[in-house]
Image 1 (tube, rainbow, N blue to C red):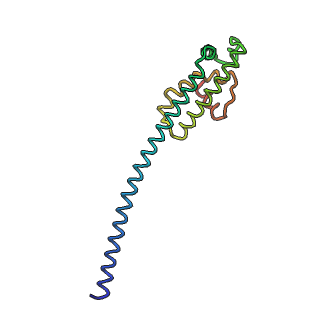
Image 2 (image 1 turned 90 degrees about the horizontal axis):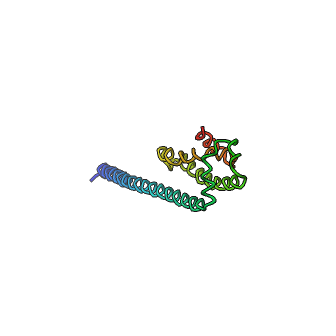
Image 3 (image 1 turned 30 degrees about the vertical axis):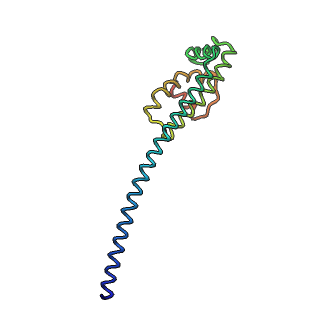
Length: 157
């Protein structure tokens, strides 16, 4: 056997090794992609569970007789002029309750903007519920981030 034949055999073996390496890497990339997809689904499920837990806590906190009575007045708030029908104590209670809801809604909006929630989901109950609270947020001048305030104003109009 001469050196040219040995060189050709070495090149062939090298090409086969490269091909096998590429095939192996292709399988690894596919497995990694599937694992990432499953991890993303799991993370989305965790986000939804955390949202549910937060909502449950907000509802539990809101469920005292006094808080429920105050929350019923939210539908009466259409602007600052409508606050005359609500006592100072109820306005204070509503402001505290709305601060709790604000935290929940801001978190939902942030999750939506980051792509963790679909547009269909966000425009379903979260945006509709926020629209119900929007006039009260504005009339009671609840402290909000600029971004959240813009969304509240958009939904209030």
